[in-house]
Each structure stands twice: as C-alpha cells, then as structure tokens.
Length: 537
Image 1 (tube, rainbow, N blue to C red):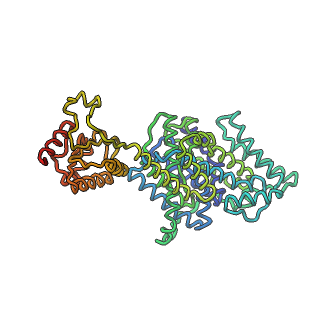
Image 2: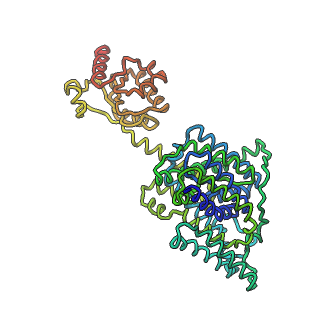
Image 3: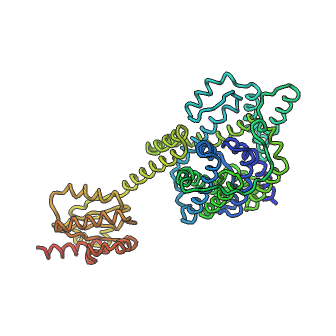
C-alpha cells in the first residue's frame, strides 16, 4: 500500500517537471512526459536500485538543446539510442563501480555549471521579454537580456516571481504536496481569470507556443548511417557518462537513506535499455532523478512497484488531462526551472570545495566555467582529462623510492633477523620501493641512481611494500635490469609478494633476471649479494 501511495505522489510530482524539462530542452511538452512514462517504467522494472525513479532531468537540458540546434530532432534520437548502447556496454563491462569514483570536484563543477545555464535560459520566459532570437552563447545571452530588459512584461513577471515564491514556501506548509504542482494550478487559474475577466492577453501559455497532444506516437526507428554515428559519438558519450553519473549518484544517495545496496552495473544496463526505448516513442534522454527518488522514499516507496505505479499515473494523466496543459503559463514553468536550477547549483558544496587543495579548486573552476561558457561535452572531457592527470601525479607521489646505506635497522627487520646479518656489504646498494610500482617509480630510480657516482656490483630492490605493479612498472623494471646488466651490475629482488610475483612471472621478467635472484626476505637477498660479490672478486 505504501508503494502504491508513493507511486501516485511521485507521478504527480513528476508531471510539471517532465513538462518543464521537455520544453526547456527544445522539444514539445508531451515528449517530456512520454520520456518519464517509458523510461520511468523500464528503469524501475529492470534497475539495480529498489527505489530509483527515472525520467528526464535538468542535467540533460543543455545537452539536448545543443544537439537539437546542431543535428535536429532526428540527431537527438540517434544520439540517445547510441547513449543507450554505451550505457549497456558500461554495465556489461562492470564499469559501474568505476564511474562512481569520478572526482567530486568534477561532479560539483558541471552540476553547478548546468544549474547556472538552466537559470540563464529561463530569464526570457520568466519576465516575458520580447526577444526574437536569444543567442546561444552564455555571455551574449546575458548581454541580450540586459539590452531588452525594458521589454519585460509586468504580468508575466508577476506570474514567474509568484511561482518561485509559491514553490519555495509550499514545503513549510506541506511535505506531501509538491510546490511546483501548487504553483502551476494557481498560476494557470490566475492567468485564465486575468485573460477572461481583466483583458490581460500578454501572458504566454504552453498552448500559444505548442500544439499539445495526448496521442501516444507510434514507434519509429530513425535512418542511421555510419557518417551520422561518427558525428554523434561525442554527444552520445556525454549523454551516457552524465546519465551514468547522475543515476549512480542518485542510487547511492538512496542507499544511504533506506540502508540498502544497489547493483550499479544492473542499474547502468537498465538505464541503457530505457534510453533505447524512450527515443523510439519520441522521448528524450533519461536517467535516475535524485529529487523524485527522494520523494519516493519519503512517501514510503521501498520496492520497484512504486516506480512502476508512477509511470502508470503519468500515462493516465497524459491520456486524460494532457489537453489542459496548454493553459499553463510559460512564466510559471520558468519559475519551476529556476527552483530546479537553485536545487542543482549546490552552492554550499561549491564554496566548501573552494577551501580544498589548489588542484581540486582548479578542476572545479575549469569544469564550471567550461560548462557555462562552452558546453557540457567539452567540460566533461577536459575535466576528466585534468582529473586523470592529477590522479596520476598523486599516485606517483605516493610511491617512495629510498636508498638504504650501511645498515638496515628498522624494527621489523631487527625482530626477523640479526643486525649483524643486515649490514650491507661493500659494493651493494639497497633500494626500497614503498607504494605501487608504476610509471612514476622508474624515473625516481633513475634520479636516485644518478646521484651515486660509484657503480655497485649488486643492486637489491626491496619490494615488500609494493602492492601491485602495472605494465609500465614492469617495463621500467626490465629496462633497469638490462641497463644494470650492461654495466655488469646484478639486480636482486627482495620481498616480492605473491600478486606481484605472478605478474612478473606472467610477463617473463624472470627470464631476464633469473629466479635465483628473487628472494623472499632481505636476509636471503643480502646472502645472495655476498655470493655474487665473492664470485666476481
């Protein structure tokens, strides 16, 4: 019963958002609702989270609008289908757990950037500005608004501002009834009264801009060519990555509230199937929606039944009440999206991150400004590249290479052996790697060895604190052995753990070094070093 009630409430909450997101994305209002119906049903039915509610979200508005402007509606359909395929591949390749670890500054950066961009796109409708064509560029858009602000319509402005106020204060009186629905009902009635009894005709409604239909479109498969696929790879990947991040973030937040654990890879596959189905019926990209998911949980939803009911409720509203949507003022929908953008902006998280290390602040600001000045595709690509570079830098810094002179006198070694046996013989150098052995460690070896003028006869490399080694690390280690061999220096490894040992053996590294030069403990390595020195003496 609780799932039934939660589903009904979430369906009502989703209605104004679906209409607003559809219009803001550059498509008709019914396409937003169709997306919520089709994608919402599939995500709840097949998803890896029990309480996830799927549908169109604010994060996609900017991407969808940009794709339509450049490639048209058919291009959007193909890009969404491709994104669906990418999401299914992400799930099948078990990338769900990896995607969840995308750096937090990137997520906050482009989420805040999207919020600012959404707010910017709503200024014209919020104040009823008379502008024939609004520029797409962020800075030019604000310049245009300032230039034309004298054309603002008083009644549209009142409807828009009143909508914002109503949505903001409704939660103080009722947690169950969505403020956006209250605002739409009150402002629609107010607009009709003003028009019919006061002669106010300047308040533009959905019906003035769109032909509203309650007919479910037939399934249509677009003509897909190889050239089209190549041109849409970047936007499709952006949709897929953003959809994956948002859906998994939403599912993770939901887990924390209900004490459950979602299956991230199953969730990605469900998101992929939803994005394959939605565009075939004229829908737009969809993902897990945090606000609707939390509404579901707060109203008692605990199983996928609630999400399925939410889709059915939307379908019934679409079939029987959709024609009434034409009376909704555009300024009211702009007010809904202003509140959505405020909720998305996360200004508290943004300010908190500004106090973090400079590298995090750099990633945050670059992602944010690229999102609002250029577009989300560029922001995500550049943000991820910067994050990867910073990750590699930080990982290389965690690997420490040091030279041990004369004696090895650490407490753990004293317990295991005798200090007399741990004295380093003449002609032997001992290096210790502390951390993962990969790209950065090889360079550190070269820098440290270059600091020593005398060439030893044996180099002992202690690897007891090396948890793993990658292909770059193996390559560097191989080069080190070959270089040492050319200089008549023997390399001996000490304390190699089983995982690293298997990786080296699989790479046929021991064919170069010789198994006799692989020692389980530093005592044995020092004994091997003495043996080598005695043979070369």
